[in-house]
Length: 429
Image (cartoon, rainbow, N blue to C red):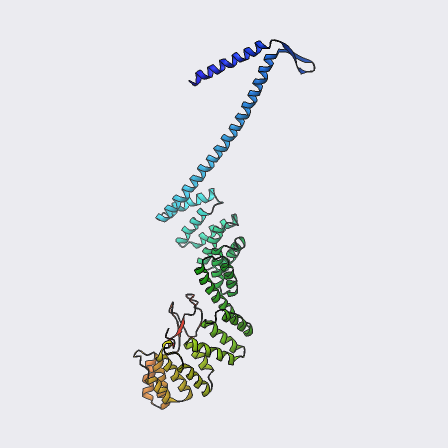
């Protein structure tokens, strides 16, 4: 059908040319040059001009079609190449997950070499080395990738994480700071950099980074948690200040915003005492003890109670604490210590006799041993000391159970805040 149509169209064109030539039999002079002239029929010239135009149009159409064909061929070639590389990556990861690390890594290596501008293959390859404990090889791959593509955030983040696993705090912070310069508002980068600063004790930098992170959060609950963490970071940064006056100012600023936070108030009292303002520290600790009973506050006040009148006042404070807020036996033990400091053995013994807990802490036995020793009751003192087993006041983290001889507001092991309680804790909570 197509051939017949082509024949018909060809015959029609020939007839049209012949008809136009027959209608225009006259001849005209056509000059190719000043000295060259042709005498041709008008119809023939008209047909010639038409054919030349048709040939030019055909050439333009052919060139355009060829260009489109080349573009399409190149795009298809790139698509096939990309698809093949994607298959290498996918199959390589499957092999690594299946335990065939050798073949999986070979495919991932090939995919990365063919498409180095994309980081997925090299990150997967580095993770395969990390999983087998070859951190130096994983780090080397990511380092090379980071040098080739300085601004790829995935490569830089993976490299920083690899430094973290290797325990290289300095290089980790350097990479994360470089990443933050490229993406200053990325929450994931800010969190990682904050944690790196915190682990190295750079509390001021950690607090500044946490402030930047808070500006990027939109979830109210998450923002509340991160704001509490900012308080902890600022608290730790304040403790690191060497000048007592600066430490007092920083802790007072925290106390204004978090007035009921016990660690801030305890450390503020310590700073006031270090600055020569012991009376203000005592008033602060006493007020805090009335509102939130804690053994650490009692210990601080007892250490400052150098006279009997001071100890009487402290006993009065203990007596006025709400019964539902304290452990009565623990309060009796603390009162007994105050009476012993006064030399009032009978009053101390009465306090110890009133302890009702059958599983009383070893402090009870140590205090009895001291009473017996002062009364000259050697055998009873030895027996009580043996039961005390060298007891000393200690503080334990409620979260990770870490024990320390001195109270601290922040647990460096688990990161808990306000979690340390005394082994003989007057607080009922």
